[in-house]
Length: 236
Image 1 (cartoon, one colour):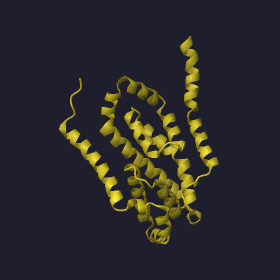
Image 2 (image 1 turned 90 degrees about the vertical axis):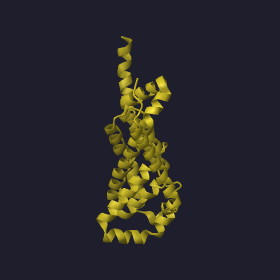
Image 3 (image 1 turned 30 degrees about the horizontal axis):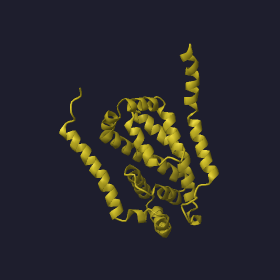
Image 4 (image 1 turned 180 degrees about the vertical axis):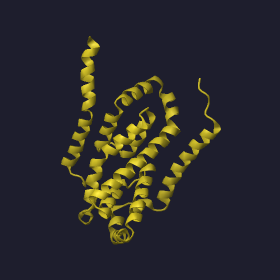
């Protein structure tokens, strides 16, 4: 029988949850969705470029922290931010900023969700949750890499779902870091051509999406190989 959580731990969880909600409310109240739009980025392109040219290091720091916050608070507009990184810093530096910032932001959200909700969720799910946890954790890197590479899964959900499992933090970080590189480069590269982008719809071609899906399937190959090798062993 486990001891009940101390009041200080409960208050910390409530405080973290309140901070998350307050961040989202503040984002909406301060007009965040308007600023994180393609139209706003195009409207302020000259100002952004001028500031970056005059204060390059500060621009990178601000962009990095803004991206971390957007991911950690699951704010809409990450796509626009990715385009902005490529537009302001170029495809290569932009990709590095996006990958590192998105990984840090995702890890913050992952750790917060694990601390606040994981224990209660596992108790509620019981034996079924334990079986799901064991299956996912056993091949955590391949599964998470698949979820990161295939664009069908919302980024913030892939940050949250593993928090309810026993996946090691280092595995989450590494799979996230590797898995988001292709998509980050594509959007940062598109950001360099911002002047020729009129809409976010259809921004990525179907062949590119198909390539991401293929990479995701390849990430599952080690799991398939492991099951094929273990199959005959179970029969003997």
